[in-house]
Amino acid sequence: MSADPVTIIGGGPAGSAAAIGLARAGSEVHLVERQRAIGDAICGGFLSWRTLQQLEALGIDSDALGGQRVTRLALFAGDRVAHSRLPHAAMGVSRHRLDTLMLDRAAACGARIQLGVKVRGIGDDGQVDCGEAGMLRANALILASGKHELPGARRTMPEAIADDPVLGLRVRADPSAGFAALVGDGIELHLFDRGYAGIVRQEDGGGNICMAVRKSLLTQAGGSPAALLAMLGAANPQLGERLAHVADLSATDAIAAVPYGFIAQSTEPGRLRVGDQAAVIPSLAGEGIGIALASARDAVAALLRGGAGAASDYQGDFARRAALPMRVAGAAWRAAESPGLARLGIGAARWFPALPRLIARTTRIV
Ligand SMILES: Cc1cc2nc3c(=O)[nH]c(=O)nc-3n(C[C@H](O)[C@H](O)[C@H](O)COP(=O)(O)OP(=O)(O)OC[C@H]3O[C@@H](n4cnc5c(N)ncnc54)[C@H](O)[C@@H]3O)c2cc1C
Image (cartoon, rainbow, N blue to C red):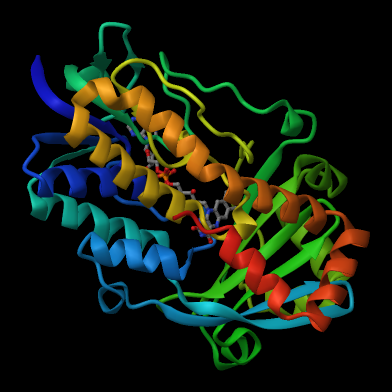
Protein backbone atom coordinates (compact mmCIF):
# COMPACT_ATOMS: atom_id res chain seq x y z
CA MET A 1 0.00 0.00 0.00
CA SER A 2 1.33 3.44 -0.90
CA ALA A 3 0.43 6.60 1.00
CA ASP A 4 0.24 9.51 -1.42
CA PRO A 5 -0.54 12.95 -0.08
CA VAL A 6 -2.87 13.56 -3.07
CA THR A 7 -4.36 11.01 -5.44
CA ILE A 8 -6.13 12.18 -8.59
CA ILE A 9 -8.61 9.89 -10.37
CA GLY A 10 -8.84 10.72 -14.08
CA GLY A 11 -6.39 12.16 -16.60
CA GLY A 12 -8.69 14.49 -18.59
CA PRO A 13 -8.19 18.27 -18.51
CA ALA A 14 -9.40 18.59 -14.90
CA GLY A 15 -7.18 15.85 -13.46
CA SER A 16 -4.12 16.93 -15.45
CA ALA A 17 -4.57 20.59 -14.50
CA ALA A 18 -4.79 19.64 -10.82
CA ALA A 19 -1.67 17.47 -11.18
CA ILE A 20 0.27 20.32 -12.83
CA GLY A 21 -0.80 22.81 -10.15
CA LEU A 22 0.06 20.56 -7.22
CA ALA A 23 3.32 19.24 -8.65
CA ARG A 24 4.49 22.77 -9.45
CA ALA A 25 3.84 23.73 -5.82
CA GLY A 26 6.05 20.84 -4.70
CA SER A 27 3.28 18.47 -3.55
CA GLU A 28 3.55 14.74 -4.00
CA VAL A 29 0.82 13.80 -6.43
CA HIS A 30 -0.23 10.55 -8.09
CA LEU A 31 -2.68 10.53 -11.01
CA VAL A 32 -4.35 7.34 -12.21
CA GLU A 33 -6.09 7.14 -15.58
CA ARG A 34 -8.02 4.08 -16.72
CA GLN A 35 -7.10 4.35 -20.42
CA ARG A 36 -3.85 2.68 -21.47
CA ALA A 37 -3.30 5.20 -24.27
CA ILE A 38 -4.62 8.73 -24.50
CA GLY A 39 -7.74 8.71 -26.62
CA ASP A 40 -9.76 11.42 -28.33
CA ALA A 41 -12.70 12.18 -26.04
CA ILE A 42 -16.04 13.12 -27.59
CA CYS A 43 -15.90 16.89 -27.30
CA GLY A 44 -16.44 19.87 -29.57
CA GLY A 45 -12.77 20.77 -29.14
CA PHE A 46 -13.57 24.48 -28.87
CA LEU A 47 -11.17 26.22 -26.47
CA SER A 48 -12.48 29.61 -25.42
CA TRP A 49 -10.18 32.62 -24.92
CA ARG A 50 -10.49 32.14 -21.15
CA THR A 51 -9.52 28.48 -21.48
CA LEU A 52 -6.50 29.47 -23.57
CA GLN A 53 -5.44 31.93 -20.83
CA GLN A 54 -5.80 29.24 -18.18
CA LEU A 55 -3.73 26.81 -20.26
CA GLU A 56 -1.07 29.50 -20.66
CA ALA A 57 -0.98 29.86 -16.86
CA LEU A 58 -0.33 26.11 -16.63
CA GLY A 59 2.59 26.44 -19.03
CA ILE A 60 0.83 25.31 -22.23
CA ASP A 61 0.79 28.04 -24.84
CA SER A 62 -1.35 28.35 -27.93
CA ASP A 63 1.60 27.72 -30.27
CA ALA A 64 2.19 24.33 -28.64
CA LEU A 65 -1.49 23.47 -29.07
CA GLY A 66 -1.22 24.36 -32.74
CA GLY A 67 -5.00 24.34 -33.34
CA GLN A 68 -7.13 26.41 -35.72
CA ARG A 69 -7.72 30.01 -34.74
CA VAL A 70 -11.44 30.75 -34.23
CA THR A 71 -12.73 34.32 -34.31
CA ARG A 72 -16.38 34.08 -35.39
CA LEU A 73 -19.60 32.48 -34.18
CA ALA A 74 -22.13 31.38 -36.80
CA LEU A 75 -25.63 30.34 -35.69
CA PHE A 76 -27.95 28.36 -37.98
CA ALA A 77 -31.61 27.39 -37.46
CA GLY A 78 -33.71 26.33 -40.45
CA ASP A 79 -33.12 28.96 -43.14
CA ARG A 80 -31.90 31.57 -40.65
CA VAL A 81 -28.23 32.43 -40.09
CA ALA A 82 -26.56 34.97 -37.79
CA HIS A 83 -22.86 35.81 -37.61
CA SER A 84 -20.99 37.63 -34.89
CA ARG A 85 -17.41 38.07 -33.79
CA LEU A 86 -16.27 36.32 -30.63
CA PRO A 87 -15.16 38.64 -27.81
CA HIS A 88 -11.58 37.30 -28.27
CA ALA A 89 -9.84 34.69 -30.42
CA ALA A 90 -10.47 31.06 -29.45
CA MET A 91 -9.12 27.77 -30.85
CA GLY A 92 -10.26 24.45 -32.30
CA VAL A 93 -8.07 21.53 -31.20
CA SER A 94 -8.58 17.79 -30.77
CA ARG A 95 -8.84 16.32 -27.32
CA HIS A 96 -6.11 13.86 -28.20
CA ARG A 97 -3.72 16.78 -28.70
CA LEU A 98 -4.89 18.71 -25.63
CA ASP A 99 -4.95 15.73 -23.25
CA THR A 100 -1.53 14.53 -24.44
CA LEU A 101 0.08 17.94 -23.89
CA MET A 102 -1.50 18.33 -20.47
CA LEU A 103 -0.48 14.90 -19.17
CA ASP A 104 3.05 15.40 -20.53
CA ARG A 105 3.23 18.72 -18.75
CA ALA A 106 2.01 17.16 -15.48
CA ALA A 107 4.71 14.49 -15.72
CA ALA A 108 7.37 17.11 -16.53
CA CYS A 109 6.34 19.05 -13.41
CA GLY A 110 6.94 15.96 -11.27
CA ALA A 111 3.51 14.30 -10.98
CA ARG A 112 3.43 10.52 -11.02
CA ILE A 113 1.17 9.46 -13.87
CA GLN A 114 -0.11 5.90 -14.21
CA LEU A 115 -2.08 4.98 -17.32
CA GLY A 116 -4.20 1.82 -17.57
CA VAL A 117 -5.29 1.92 -13.91
CA LYS A 118 -9.04 1.91 -13.36
CA VAL A 119 -10.41 2.84 -9.96
CA ARG A 120 -13.00 0.21 -8.96
CA GLY A 121 -14.14 1.68 -5.69
CA ILE A 122 -13.52 4.27 -3.00
CA GLY A 123 -13.95 3.29 0.64
CA ASP A 124 -15.21 5.51 3.46
CA ASP A 125 -11.73 5.23 4.99
CA GLY A 126 -10.20 6.95 1.91
CA GLN A 127 -8.81 3.75 0.42
CA VAL A 128 -8.91 3.57 -3.35
CA ASP A 129 -9.34 0.16 -4.94
CA CYS A 130 -7.43 0.00 -8.22
CA GLY A 131 -8.12 -3.67 -8.92
CA GLU A 132 -5.01 -5.55 -10.03
CA ALA A 133 -2.92 -2.39 -9.53
CA GLY A 134 -3.61 -2.64 -5.78
CA MET A 135 -4.94 -0.30 -3.12
CA LEU A 136 -4.01 3.35 -2.66
CA ARG A 137 -4.48 5.46 0.43
CA ALA A 138 -4.71 9.18 -0.06
CA ASN A 139 -4.69 12.09 2.37
CA ALA A 140 -6.81 13.95 -0.15
CA LEU A 141 -8.60 12.64 -3.19
CA ILE A 142 -9.31 14.63 -6.34
CA LEU A 143 -12.25 13.14 -8.24
CA ALA A 144 -11.69 13.96 -11.93
CA SER A 145 -13.37 11.05 -13.69
CA GLY A 146 -15.55 13.30 -15.86
CA LYS A 147 -18.93 11.84 -16.73
CA HIS A 148 -18.02 8.46 -15.28
CA GLU A 149 -19.37 7.61 -11.87
CA LEU A 150 -16.93 6.28 -9.30
CA PRO A 151 -18.22 3.44 -7.09
CA GLY A 152 -18.32 4.82 -3.57
CA ALA A 153 -18.59 8.43 -4.78
CA ARG A 154 -21.62 8.58 -7.07
CA ARG A 155 -23.32 11.87 -7.91
CA THR A 156 -27.06 12.61 -7.78
CA MET A 157 -28.23 13.71 -11.21
CA PRO A 158 -30.73 16.47 -12.00
CA GLU A 159 -34.19 15.04 -12.63
CA ALA A 160 -34.84 17.48 -15.48
CA ILE A 161 -32.87 15.43 -18.02
CA ALA A 162 -33.79 11.95 -16.80
CA ASP A 163 -36.99 11.65 -18.87
CA ASP A 164 -35.27 12.33 -22.22
CA PRO A 165 -31.48 12.05 -21.69
CA VAL A 166 -28.90 13.93 -23.74
CA LEU A 167 -26.51 11.91 -25.92
CA GLY A 168 -23.21 13.10 -27.39
CA LEU A 169 -22.33 12.08 -30.97
CA ARG A 170 -19.24 12.92 -33.01
CA VAL A 171 -18.12 12.46 -36.62
CA ARG A 172 -15.12 13.86 -38.44
CA ALA A 173 -15.01 15.76 -41.72
CA ASP A 174 -11.91 15.19 -43.84
CA PRO A 175 -9.54 18.14 -44.28
CA SER A 176 -10.28 19.74 -47.66
CA ALA A 177 -10.36 23.15 -49.29
CA GLY A 178 -14.13 22.79 -49.66
CA PHE A 179 -14.67 22.21 -45.93
CA ALA A 180 -12.26 25.03 -45.04
CA ALA A 181 -14.20 27.40 -47.32
CA LEU A 182 -17.46 26.51 -45.56
CA VAL A 183 -16.36 26.73 -41.92
CA GLY A 184 -13.24 28.93 -42.13
CA ASP A 185 -12.28 30.46 -38.78
CA GLY A 186 -15.75 30.02 -37.29
CA ILE A 187 -17.34 28.00 -34.56
CA GLU A 188 -20.70 26.98 -35.96
CA LEU A 189 -23.77 26.01 -33.95
CA HIS A 190 -26.53 24.35 -36.01
CA LEU A 191 -29.72 24.32 -33.93
CA PHE A 192 -32.60 21.91 -34.49
CA ASP A 193 -35.48 20.32 -32.61
CA ARG A 194 -34.06 18.55 -29.50
CA GLY A 195 -30.40 19.16 -30.20
CA TYR A 196 -27.56 21.02 -31.83
CA ALA A 197 -24.36 20.33 -33.78
CA GLY A 198 -21.16 22.26 -33.08
CA ILE A 199 -18.61 22.41 -35.91
CA VAL A 200 -15.05 23.67 -35.76
CA ARG A 201 -11.86 22.95 -37.67
CA GLN A 202 -8.97 21.41 -35.72
CA GLU A 203 -5.20 21.17 -35.99
CA ASP A 204 -5.18 18.99 -39.11
CA GLY A 205 -7.68 21.27 -40.90
CA GLY A 206 -10.39 18.61 -40.68
CA GLY A 207 -13.68 19.23 -38.96
CA ASN A 208 -14.97 18.05 -35.64
CA ILE A 209 -18.76 17.73 -35.88
CA CYS A 210 -20.04 17.14 -32.38
CA MET A 211 -23.70 16.93 -31.43
CA ALA A 212 -25.76 16.84 -28.29
CA VAL A 213 -29.20 15.37 -28.99
CA ARG A 214 -32.09 14.05 -26.95
CA LYS A 215 -32.45 10.30 -26.95
CA SER A 216 -35.98 10.58 -28.39
CA LEU A 217 -34.48 12.05 -31.59
CA LEU A 218 -32.23 9.02 -32.02
CA THR A 219 -35.22 6.76 -31.39
CA GLN A 220 -37.11 8.66 -34.11
CA ALA A 221 -34.27 7.79 -36.50
CA GLY A 222 -34.65 4.10 -35.67
CA GLY A 223 -31.80 4.09 -33.14
CA SER A 224 -29.08 4.40 -35.79
CA PRO A 225 -26.66 7.37 -35.46
CA ALA A 226 -25.92 7.25 -39.23
CA ALA A 227 -29.65 7.41 -40.02
CA LEU A 228 -30.02 10.29 -37.55
CA LEU A 229 -27.21 12.26 -39.23
CA ALA A 230 -28.74 11.63 -42.66
CA MET A 231 -32.14 12.77 -41.35
CA LEU A 232 -30.68 15.93 -39.80
CA GLY A 233 -28.65 16.70 -42.93
CA ALA A 234 -31.76 16.42 -45.12
CA ALA A 235 -33.83 18.66 -42.81
CA ASN A 236 -31.08 21.27 -42.32
CA PRO A 237 -29.38 21.92 -45.68
CA GLN A 238 -26.45 23.96 -44.26
CA LEU A 239 -25.65 21.14 -41.84
CA GLY A 240 -26.13 18.63 -44.68
CA GLU A 241 -23.55 20.53 -46.77
CA ARG A 242 -20.98 20.05 -43.99
CA LEU A 243 -21.92 16.43 -43.31
CA ALA A 244 -21.28 15.73 -47.00
CA HIS A 245 -17.55 16.08 -46.14
CA VAL A 246 -17.74 13.13 -43.72
CA ALA A 247 -16.45 10.02 -45.49
CA ASP A 248 -18.38 7.52 -43.38
CA LEU A 249 -21.43 8.57 -41.37
CA SER A 250 -21.49 5.21 -39.63
CA ALA A 251 -18.11 5.99 -38.00
CA THR A 252 -19.91 7.84 -35.21
CA ASP A 253 -18.58 7.99 -31.66
CA ALA A 254 -21.28 8.22 -29.00
CA ILE A 255 -21.69 8.79 -25.28
CA ALA A 256 -24.86 8.34 -23.28
CA ALA A 257 -26.64 10.45 -20.67
CA VAL A 258 -24.69 13.69 -20.37
CA PRO A 259 -25.91 15.27 -17.09
CA TYR A 260 -26.21 18.93 -18.19
CA GLY A 261 -26.95 21.22 -15.27
CA PHE A 262 -25.34 19.08 -12.57
CA ILE A 263 -23.47 21.07 -9.89
CA ALA A 264 -21.84 19.41 -6.87
CA GLN A 265 -23.05 21.64 -4.02
CA SER A 266 -21.17 19.68 -1.37
CA THR A 267 -18.68 16.86 -1.01
CA GLU A 268 -17.49 14.21 1.40
CA PRO A 269 -14.52 14.96 3.73
CA GLY A 270 -11.18 14.91 1.93
CA ARG A 271 -12.71 14.57 -1.56
CA LEU A 272 -12.56 17.42 -4.06
CA ARG A 273 -14.63 17.12 -7.24
CA VAL A 274 -13.24 18.88 -10.30
CA GLY A 275 -14.27 19.21 -13.96
CA ASP A 276 -17.47 17.40 -14.91
CA GLN A 277 -17.50 15.90 -11.41
CA ALA A 278 -17.96 19.48 -10.12
CA ALA A 279 -20.29 20.97 -12.75
CA VAL A 280 -21.55 19.96 -16.21
CA ILE A 281 -22.32 23.03 -18.30
CA PRO A 282 -24.43 22.55 -21.46
CA SER A 283 -21.82 21.95 -24.11
CA LEU A 284 -23.07 24.51 -26.62
CA ALA A 285 -21.46 27.09 -24.31
CA GLY A 286 -18.04 25.61 -25.16
CA GLU A 287 -16.89 26.08 -21.55
CA GLY A 288 -16.66 22.55 -20.13
CA ILE A 289 -12.87 22.55 -20.40
CA GLY A 290 -12.82 26.05 -18.89
CA ILE A 291 -14.76 24.67 -15.91
CA ALA A 292 -12.34 21.74 -15.69
CA LEU A 293 -9.33 24.08 -15.51
CA ALA A 294 -10.94 26.64 -13.19
CA SER A 295 -12.16 23.99 -10.73
CA ALA A 296 -8.74 22.32 -10.72
CA ARG A 297 -7.08 25.68 -10.06
CA ASP A 298 -9.43 26.38 -7.14
CA ALA A 299 -9.09 22.85 -5.73
CA VAL A 300 -5.30 23.12 -5.81
CA ALA A 301 -5.40 26.51 -4.09
CA ALA A 302 -7.72 25.10 -1.39
CA LEU A 303 -5.49 22.06 -0.79
CA LEU A 304 -2.36 24.18 -0.56
CA ARG A 305 -4.11 26.53 1.86
CA GLY A 306 -5.95 24.11 4.11
CA GLY A 307 -5.08 20.53 3.17
CA ALA A 308 -7.75 17.85 2.84
CA GLY A 309 -9.90 19.68 5.41
CA ALA A 310 -10.57 22.43 2.86
CA ALA A 311 -12.57 20.13 0.56
CA SER A 312 -16.01 21.19 1.70
CA ASP A 313 -15.33 24.96 1.51
CA TYR A 314 -13.79 24.55 -1.95
CA GLN A 315 -16.82 22.64 -3.29
CA GLY A 316 -19.34 25.17 -1.97
CA ASP A 317 -17.31 28.13 -3.27
CA PHE A 318 -16.91 26.58 -6.71
CA ALA A 319 -20.64 25.79 -6.95
CA ARG A 320 -21.39 29.46 -6.29
CA ARG A 321 -18.81 30.59 -8.85
CA ALA A 322 -20.24 28.29 -11.51
CA ALA A 323 -23.88 29.17 -10.84
CA LEU A 324 -24.28 32.15 -13.22
CA PRO A 325 -22.51 30.64 -16.27
CA MET A 326 -24.51 27.43 -15.70
CA ARG A 327 -27.82 29.31 -15.50
CA VAL A 328 -27.16 31.35 -18.65
CA ALA A 329 -25.90 28.30 -20.59
CA GLY A 330 -28.93 26.29 -19.42
CA ALA A 331 -31.34 28.95 -20.67
CA ALA A 332 -29.48 29.23 -24.02
CA TRP A 333 -29.51 25.43 -24.43
CA ARG A 334 -33.25 25.16 -23.70
CA ALA A 335 -33.98 27.92 -26.23
CA ALA A 336 -31.63 26.35 -28.79
CA GLU A 337 -33.33 22.96 -28.76
CA SER A 338 -36.79 24.46 -29.30
CA PRO A 339 -37.18 25.38 -33.03
CA GLY A 340 -39.46 28.39 -32.45
CA LEU A 341 -37.23 29.95 -29.80
CA ALA A 342 -34.08 29.16 -31.80
CA ARG A 343 -35.43 31.01 -34.85
CA LEU A 344 -36.47 33.94 -32.66
CA GLY A 345 -33.04 33.98 -31.03
CA ILE A 346 -31.27 34.00 -34.37
CA GLY A 347 -33.53 36.81 -35.57
CA ALA A 348 -32.55 38.79 -32.46
CA ALA A 349 -28.85 37.98 -32.98
CA ARG A 350 -29.02 39.35 -36.55
CA TRP A 351 -30.33 42.67 -35.29
CA PHE A 352 -28.14 42.80 -32.19
CA PRO A 353 -24.83 40.98 -32.87
CA ALA A 354 -23.78 42.10 -29.39
CA LEU A 355 -26.32 39.63 -27.91
CA PRO A 356 -24.42 36.38 -28.71
CA ARG A 357 -21.24 38.12 -27.59
CA LEU A 358 -22.87 38.95 -24.25
CA ILE A 359 -24.02 35.33 -23.84
CA ALA A 360 -20.54 34.12 -24.79
CA ARG A 361 -19.04 36.35 -22.11
CA THR A 362 -21.50 35.46 -19.35
CA THR A 363 -21.09 31.73 -19.89
CA ARG A 364 -17.32 31.92 -19.14
CA ILE A 365 -16.12 30.84 -15.73
CA VAL A 366 -13.77 33.26 -13.98
C1 LIG B 1 -21.13 16.71 -27.02
C2 LIG B 1 -20.15 17.49 -26.17
C3 LIG B 1 -19.41 18.53 -26.73
C4 LIG B 1 -18.55 19.28 -25.94
N1 LIG B 1 -17.84 20.31 -26.52
C5 LIG B 1 -17.03 21.08 -25.75
C6 LIG B 1 -16.28 22.15 -26.33
O1 LIG B 1 -16.32 22.38 -27.54
N2 LIG B 1 -15.50 22.92 -25.51
C7 LIG B 1 -15.43 22.69 -24.16
O2 LIG B 1 -14.74 23.44 -23.46
N3 LIG B 1 -16.10 21.65 -23.59
C8 LIG B 1 -16.88 20.85 -24.35
N4 LIG B 1 -17.53 19.78 -23.79
C9 LIG B 1 -17.35 19.51 -22.36
C10 LIG B 1 -15.99 18.84 -22.07
O3 LIG B 1 -15.79 17.75 -22.94
C11 LIG B 1 -15.95 18.35 -20.62
O4 LIG B 1 -16.49 19.32 -19.77
C12 LIG B 1 -14.51 18.04 -20.20
O5 LIG B 1 -14.04 16.93 -20.92
C13 LIG B 1 -14.44 17.73 -18.72
O6 LIG B 1 -13.12 17.37 -18.38
P1 LIG B 1 -12.84 16.34 -17.19
O7 LIG B 1 -11.37 16.26 -17.05
O8 LIG B 1 -13.69 16.70 -16.03
O9 LIG B 1 -13.45 14.95 -17.71
P2 LIG B 1 -12.99 13.95 -18.97
O10 LIG B 1 -12.44 14.81 -20.01
O11 LIG B 1 -14.18 13.17 -19.20
O12 LIG B 1 -11.83 13.12 -18.31
C14 LIG B 1 -12.10 12.16 -17.32
C15 LIG B 1 -11.00 11.11 -17.35
O13 LIG B 1 -11.19 10.21 -16.26
C16 LIG B 1 -10.93 8.89 -16.69
N5 LIG B 1 -11.65 7.97 -15.80
C17 LIG B 1 -12.99 7.79 -15.73
N6 LIG B 1 -13.29 6.85 -14.82
C18 LIG B 1 -12.11 6.44 -14.29
C19 LIG B 1 -11.77 5.46 -13.31
N7 LIG B 1 -12.71 4.73 -12.69
N8 LIG B 1 -10.47 5.27 -13.01
C20 LIG B 1 -9.50 6.01 -13.64
N9 LIG B 1 -9.76 6.92 -14.60
C21 LIG B 1 -11.07 7.15 -14.91
C22 LIG B 1 -11.46 8.87 -18.12
O14 LIG B 1 -10.88 7.82 -18.88
C23 LIG B 1 -11.05 10.25 -18.62
O15 LIG B 1 -9.78 10.26 -19.23
C24 LIG B 1 -18.39 18.98 -24.56
C25 LIG B 1 -19.10 17.92 -24.01
C26 LIG B 1 -19.96 17.17 -24.80
C27 LIG B 1 -20.72 16.03 -24.18
